Length: 421
Ligand code: FAD
Image (cartoon, rainbow, N blue to C red):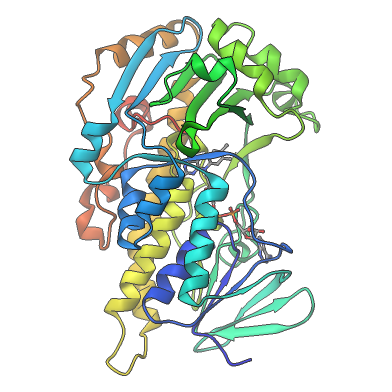
């Protein structure tokens, strides 16, 4: 087998997005996935304009829209009394940022990227678990569990939250939030679906819990996500987030939220971990991308989007650092990637944590939050511009990204009004 230009480890949304982006730039890309088949577990995913802009450039937006739903509004309500707190007019938001806010089934987004990679000629290999990474001087090599080795000018590690490659750059572990997510879908014929506006992405925020719903597949499914803080996790028990905790966590929420709980899948749940931000993602010719570099809590719904942005930014810098004979100046391309992405993603990670705290407030703090949110102008975009505006290509395009934001003011100042599940 001849060497490809790039090896991508991991066939999740991040790995596929990067493989497609680099193949579009004329590179030969080999993608190694440890699973026996490509796929995504879970239900819906929200894609804000900073992602649909990229899908459009890739020529994939129309297909994504046909598979998903373009909602009219995002509405935040109080989970206890059900009252509306604030909203985004997603039609106006689309006019402002030039691209739609889209919700789509995860497997549909994953399948869309997989098909794009197949058409573009990415070499897609399953049953290929990478156990070791090493730089070779002028390139990098991975070794599979089978003992086989693969070499390329660049290795991109898009191997997720538990990334093995991250150990080359950071001696850290995933950070437990003690929160757990339950997901589930409701078929269109259920009376539950008739009781909601499928044109809305709705998030109900409550003490130590929240509940999200939105339509999927042209309104054929209602996606629901229920997230709560696990008392067993707080008590340090191993077996946390189990279904017995679900109903208790939502006991004080309004009828509408509690009526949604029987539709959640009870045989699987997702414990919520992130990692502390790291500022170096590149070790010579090995680069982190997606959750391996910046796994967030999902509260501002940007994890998969950041992964897709990473791939796009890298592709842009490959194009800018390629000589007429096709040779790529990898150190320059990777230095540009490194200069642009970590600071933006650091801000997303820290904002996501703060946004979760804001959602889950109780008592007086909850009332103060509600008063602030009710007073917000629907058409005030000052908190979304940094996130939904054009993807950074150079640090100069995001000058405020380097200004540390005091955490005390971050709860409201950094809050983007999104309903991440
Ligand atoms: P992963 O999806 O983890 O993919 C990693 C891949 O690498 C996997 O296929 C894995 O099998 C493979 N792999 C791992 N190790 C190896 C190895 N050693 N060798 C070979 N292959 C390997 N994001 C949004 O943008 N919008 C949302 O609305 C949103 N909602 C969310 C809701 C929930 C409840 C959760 C939990 C997350 C949500 N996210 C959302 C975040 C998003 O799902 C992730 O950030 C994103 O899927 C990360 O993609 P990735 O490709 O980087 O990693």
